[in-house]
Image (cartoon, rainbow, N blue to C red; front, top):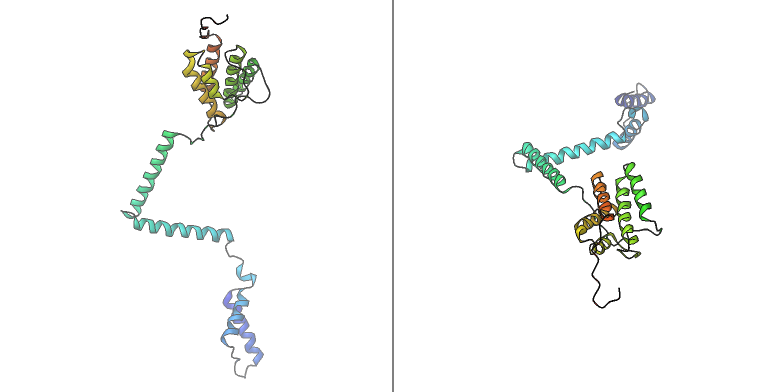
Length: 232
């Protein structure tokens, strides 16, 4: 049933109701409009209407089209100029992303290096190797740094102090191990970046830290000379 057919049918019924020989019934404008609206509001007239999703999508694309038209009219060179500007902005953004890498949060170096459960250097090394074997490089780097610091504590090169951070451990260990001072600082920074800065460790990061741990284990510390007159 089409919309005109429904309205004509209503009009025909009104004509027959008044009699064929009598003058037609005249309906005022408002009742006629109301009758037409009631007729057209029936579900039969809306079976093929688009869904709300399609209507919303059409509205969105109309808005995008209007926005693009307005921008192309304001940009030098019209549509072609606008496309060139957009491509230039994307190229600059890609170059910055490639140069600077993923944005990272500032490492919270004040966070303690160790948790509440004390473990030996050997236990930390075993945990690090297990993580590395599974490709869990973030956890492997953290455990290897803990193994390195715990080893220095076990050798009495560092005091076993709860709450020590990686940066503090590196600075303190650099005194008896001046030859590894730079590498210790780099290791502490890698630990902070992975543990607190949102960075992702790599196999190379772990390999460098493991090599440093092994090197320090075989390094003779530069102990401070005993002051003259002090007990030996």
